[in-house]
Image (tube, rainbow, N blue to C red; front, side):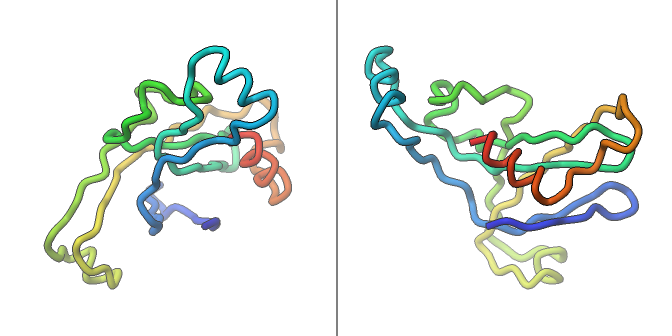
Amino acid sequence: MRGKFRTDAEGRYLVRTVRPVNYPIPSDGPVGRMLRATGRHPWRPAHIHFVISAEGYEPVTTHIFDRTDEYLGSDAVFAVKDSLVCDFVRHESLTGEATALGISPPFLTADFDFHLKPASERGATVLDAQQRLAALGAAG
């Protein structure tokens, strides 16, 4: 469930994956004690992680969330922002793009625009593979 993708000349991208689902974080040990003490549940809302980098821009590690998830308002790790929530739209019939990609209905699409900040330091803008894995681990 990992991949490396490139945009086209106009910055467009396509990622084919499964619809994300919510899941619980480990709730044993200190994290579990903290959750119980604060009356919180261990659930993360459905999301997809991204690490985005481009020459001349600051890299960013983020995720997008499914608007329909029941845990959006109570994420165990407080990571949901309105700007990261998107709609997963269900399609019951074929479209020209779906046919070209070999996708059969039903399928879902989600549109999301990532925005990068221009780099403040030259040469430190594209993450190498080890940095990407470390960033994904830190993102949860």
